[in-house]
Image (cartoon, rainbow, N blue to C red; front, side, top):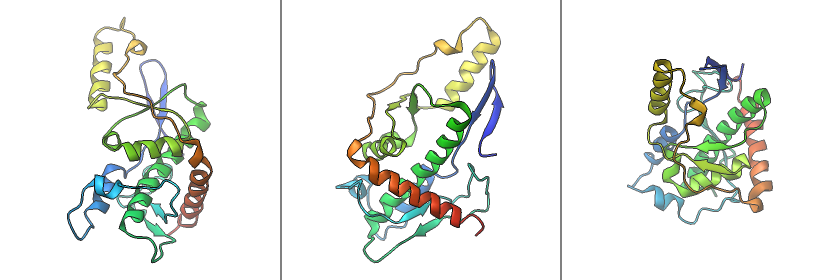
Length: 204
């Protein structure tokens, strides 16, 4: 129930997705009382900082709960949490929801040989590194600008010529992002806090 499933060229493809990623980050940045940049918000970010929990369901929830009407927000917010710390919590919350999706998919299919990362997150080295820390795996940046369009083009080519091997397609990639072991314990603790908040908030 936590995943979706599509028919692929040769077998079924299961996956999961979030309803709030860069759109949620853009939403939060727009709350600033003065114009600010992402570089300003991320300057000096400490991955071990005591951040509040953020449930990233500002635009509803896709996986794992399929809750279109689900609400998001902060939990554990105190006066010590300034705008930068709450921004960091937003980045963490989005990634924790994706980690939930990843956990659901790997429970069905096992651990992957490689994890590709793509999209707007690659515009931020800070967020990309945080992603590697949250997943606890080395991430490989996929440099294709429009992955969905590329997938459709490859699928169309295969339908026109079934002798093509989709497995042979190798996208251009960037330098891998390695998780920082010194943040492994604190990141795991934050993820557990997120999961507890997610469970407590399930029926609200």
